[in-house]
Image (cartoon, rainbow, N blue to C red; front, side, top):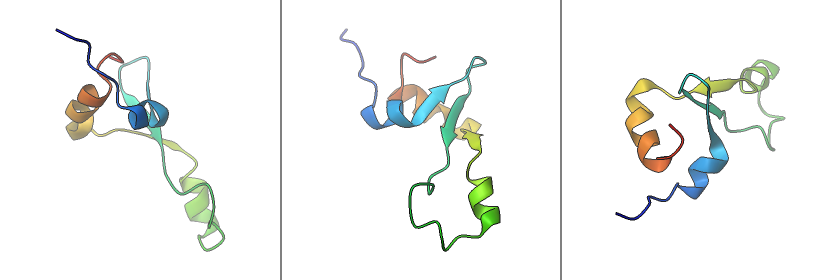
Length: 66
């Protein structure tokens, strides 16, 4: 059986933590942020954890990360 390929976009956007959860950064922090409130900009700096319902998809796009 051949090896599965990791999704190129996923490997740039997601990291697996030591406990096996998948961490990602919120979008919208590159440009056009002047229209957003400071509160919105501050909250989007923090990284998030992928929801449990999406973990099956993550295991398909990043098969060798877990």
